[in-house]
Image 1 (tube, one colour):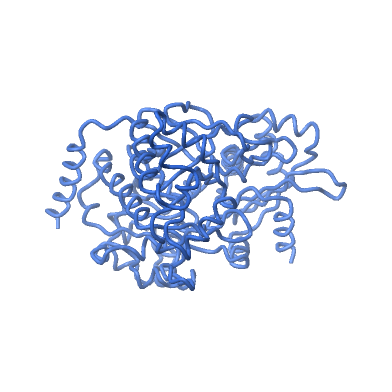
Image 2: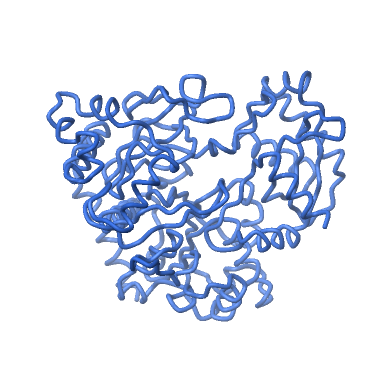
Length: 506
């Protein structure tokens, strides 16, 4: 088996070297836009907005941004709904799948078309990520090991028009070719189990028989799975049964609030990579060691735009302005938050995903996710991004000598009709709620001048309520948000926070 690892690693290394000098990112992006417009020129969307004319324009990007408006899910959804029944609406043909978003916002899941071209684009990004692995000097035994992907259920539903529906990770698993079965775990049979607890029980049962070298999945659920395996088999660490475990590909949410608890499960170094794989595309991935920043997938079927997350692009609640300023990749700068806008081979056009990002490097173009536009806490002028909230929670938890993976916060009115920030902290460790609230308040005052001003005016207090992980998981199960690739919001609107508190009180 040592020879197999050597051959696989050598093949990847050779492939990387054969790539030659890369095309500049801006040239790649213009090329991607032209390919997208040419492929979709005869669709209903392409004819309506005049893709033919754009392609004849001297500046195709300028023409595209002038003629095609920015789209939210609500504005493009009628086009996508027609595509369920009719061909050639926003992309040639009819999509074979529709991805249900994993539900971080809104009252119901979004349904996003998944075309064959789109599935191929995600495979291409995955291949590019694999081709970057030689930079990490990984051991050869990794390339002989199995990969455990903790996805949502691969047991997809079928709609009345014959298309299959599910979360994107389940769709990806269901489209794995047969030869993936040689190294993919937990395997399609277990991945198809709908009930999260039953699926985890099967994984725990089968785990000792696997040779896992890499794991991929959202941190909250991967952590829970690993803890159940360690507990179920009375292990000192997960490496007791998976000595070749070398890589964990995180994604979906920020990893930092989970780092300490993951490290407790390892007895040797595990390389942590980050991935940006959403229902709308495989957008970016960690491509070099000693960073979790992610290289943007600029040559894989996506055209990106970046709206400044300030008065040039959004209003005070984080909603994108109708006349928002939009930048191409050659116009972005470091240390500036942007709202990500994407056009893709799934038939998304100038689509606002809802994520905010920041560039950490421009050669190559690398990003980190800083939060969601809807997870922007600014009801009374506090202007707190998810990144700032994470930083405060991590530092406050460190000061209290505890770990906190999940939290929720919202601006609500107290009994006097004044706004306060209500926090719900998820930890099995005992804390002094009032003291912890004071610590969070002080840290945010020091790190954010807008928050400090708000605290002297309309924001009258900070309140913390601790709940156990069991209570939190009961809440997720009660709201249908338990398992796999589900992400829960860190910033809640007032109505949702009050509903959450009511659930806790009951």
